[in-house]
Length: 380
Image (cartoon, rainbow, N blue to C red; front, side, top):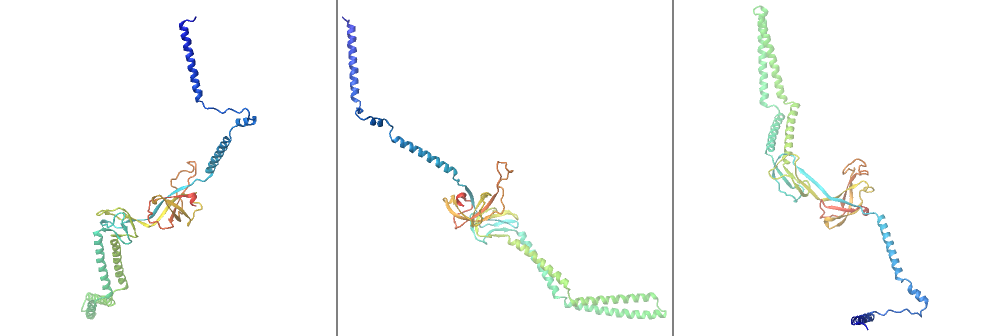
């Protein structure tokens, strides 16, 4: 007989085995039933079931086509010419107005950004010394004109009568000197008078004769009046005085600086009371009615470009507005933007040409300084 411990061990082993069998039975109840192969089906059907599904081949074809499409698009993108974007800038006619005389700024009725018309007063300069010189020149002209008038009128009648009386007195003196000479000569020939006395009478007669001749010349000069040369000198003096006045008047006119064109005040360089010298800029005007687009293009981009060509540009400041422009000016000579030795950077340096293109249609809001972009490959 087995002992009590061995009997207990057998009972516990049996209970554990029954528990495992119950657990396996419960698991079998939850497993789905799998279809069993039909052993009676022909062998061909069984082989077909063993082949891969048709969807795998379709997927492989789609993948291959996708790869080919990607490769084709990549090659097309590589050979496709890339867009060349060139940048320009809007510009306009600018007039820098400078003073031609010195002085202090007395008036400046305009400010920056004011719109002005042609002929409008911009700056008034004070220069008292210049005004004084003008009055002095006017006085000198009056003197020259009076002298010319005196010469053109001729010799006064009183002067002519005076010269005539001088001739008559000279004739009387000659007559007296002649009589005295005749008497002394007779006496000297009789031996009653010395030869020295005769010499004195001869000299007196000669002096009287010459004085009469001088008086006659003066009388003839008074009657004839002034010569052509004297009139020319007087007329030249008047012309000189008038030229001096014209010069000073032109300088006085420069004391009021007026707008040469209609435009907008861009910069102001002189304040009220400031002393300015000739050539110093007072202010600048910009003609907003003459706005163009300036492009600095390399010489290889200018090839084939001519005046009259049109292309489209984009203005970012106006909401990427695209406008057509027309080329009107191409620089006669190209310049180097930054010159370097040839092939110092691995390639030859290229010059740039300034090209001015004007909008075909009026763009009211286009202002100088706005950027402009153009696809150079697609625009031409």
